[in-house]
Amino acid sequence: MLSASVLSALLATQAPTHQLGELTFESCTLEGPGGERYSGARCARFSVPEDRDDPKSRTIELAVAWVPARTAEPKPDPVFFLAGGPGQAAREAFASSPEPFARILRERALILVDQRGTGASHPLDCPELAEEDDGETDRAALLARTVERTRRCRDRLSADADLTRYTTTDAVRDLDDVRRAIGAEAINLLGGSYGTRVAQVYLRNYPQHTRSVVLDGVVPPGLALGAEHAKNLDAALALQWARCAQDAECNAHFPAPAADLAQLRAELLAAPRKVKYVHPTTGLEAEDELDVNTFAGVVRLFAYSPQTASLLPMALHDAARGDSGRLLAYSNLIRDGLVESLSRGMELSVICTEDADRMKVDPEDASTLLGTEFVTVLEASCAEWPKGKRPDDFNAPLSTDVPVLVLSGGLDPVTPPRYGEAALAGLGHARHVVAPGLGHGVFGTACGSRTVADFYEAPVPEQLDVACFERLQALPPFRGPLGWGP
Image (cartoon, rainbow, N blue to C red; front, side, top):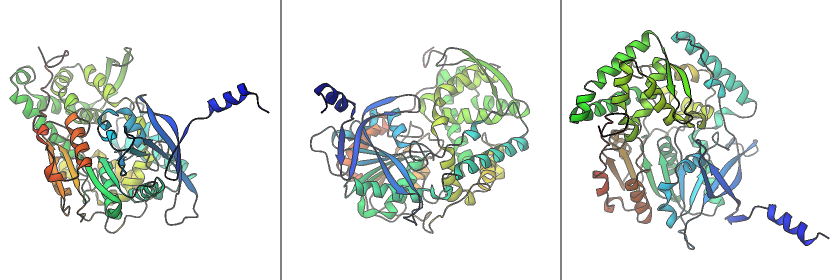
């Protein structure tokens, strides 16, 4: 017989379990890409066939998290959060910023499923694509390196994955299996960026199990994801420059951000530059090479949110006059953990199947900040990547009366408000709300999270009180290193 002390020790090592439908969960701590931790979740593993058309195919395990509602009697329809990317994991994305979900959790549970190929759900990571370029500047040589790295990643992952089976359509079938397993007859969807595509495909395929949908920064069904990145960024930057011109202090200190940007792009096209700066999190001196593609990517990251976009006129002004340190320091602060958190193989499986064949290099993009690089690299990479099946109706407008709330940021450089208008086609019970001062993502604000929670409580779009969005003005541009003041 076991002694009482031994038995107590054994019991203490067993994590408490919690039942939700057919799934058994254990208490767990979720971790964000930047090391953030959330300890109020419960985690489970859920097996699904990798090949959805062959139930006898090998199985893969999905990582599922359940964040219980803060009430003894939760509503029966949980919220499924669908992360962006493609390539972001839902559990990581939630852990990095759980605060906006607090109102939802008052009444409803939150379900987080790492989409197949991301996070802890048979991840398709491609560290090969993050290898250093050792100062190479020739575009043809860089493209050849990217293609070679893509092949290596493809060959390595293919030993343990059918790369044609990591598409949005496959993932949506996973989601409905999870819904069924937890015993929910109907669910609410919250999709951000690429997650809005997942939400729309789920709504198309399972309207009978969809109570309501929120699309934040929407990718409309007819869009080839990425085809308009270059034009959208330039349009968003033009709005930022107009804001600076209308602000007396910004205009006085930084009178020509567009010219500063053009000058820097021309200089970096001619030759990259070595930049020394103090790393914003370690405090140590660092040195990086700034080439034109890195520069374009940094500016694009800045444009995502009003907080970082307000830094652009000052950072570009300094960089055009020889001090690029602030630009790189800020960019490291923004992107820390972001690149590592994306599953690039899953991203390729999605985009190469669903978008790449509808993308063509547009000569007009050559004069934009991003240029034609994104489409050129994607075409070359997808020529090497296995492709799945895209349903015939994949890009057709939706036709449904399920309540849908569409949110757009007026300054969004990725999914501008016109995408929200396009997504409304065929939605019989929907509303599009534009937050004029926000960028890519509206839900994360106090106004956005309150509106979304109100919508789930009573999904009648036309009756929502959205007055707070009109008060969400963009932040004024920074006028110096200490912020908005002198």
